[in-house]
Image 1: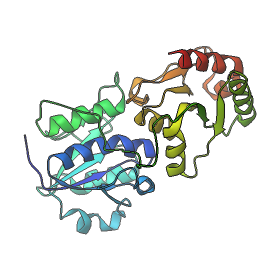
Image 2: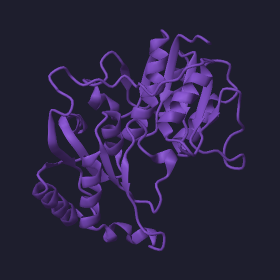
Image 3: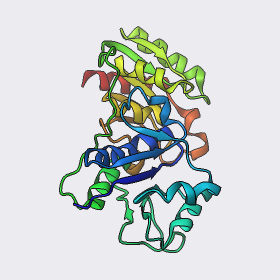
Length: 282
């Protein structure tokens, strides 16, 4: 197993990306490394990630001064200008060592691979890939999807087993209101969430029996919190790499002949409610 003392992990922008890359952070911290996780929103979950250090993503003009103190930098590559500039800035440098985690890779559009880079398997969820990648980087035999997320002590997991946390899609809010009504008629207690307060959303989801929502950060958060989840997918076929990967989710999908742009308009309340009832029976 290789040993590094000072590590920077630079995540992509979404909360779900941050949650997944925290698997690498947690593993490195458990091996004794000092890790700073760079993400603009994860600090909102500081009560859920006690003992970890977060910092806003580094401004490009400060890259050299900020990263020179690290032995290892792990970059989650998303094809943005920001990621490309970091890769270019650190390419070929002896310190810090750079390891790039590529969700997808093409030799025609991405930088040449180094011995420290990892390319993900599209057939398994991203969080599984991160767990395997950090294990490979450390030359360890075992791997784990534990990212250190732990609920504050006053919360109880699935305290309200009949409560269903629902994140409405902003495109079809009326349909989600009807879904909530039907869920209530089935003997459950729907509660609607917003994306604005991620910490409050985490608390509500953690104590709820179930979660329903479109593909979003909160789907991954619910999976991370081991809450049974029904994802109303925006894809005709769920993409394994993008699926929530902690607790396996159930999916509502669409016929292949529907144009992608019209998918949410064809969400059937009855189909979602039926899918939820199947999930609840499990």
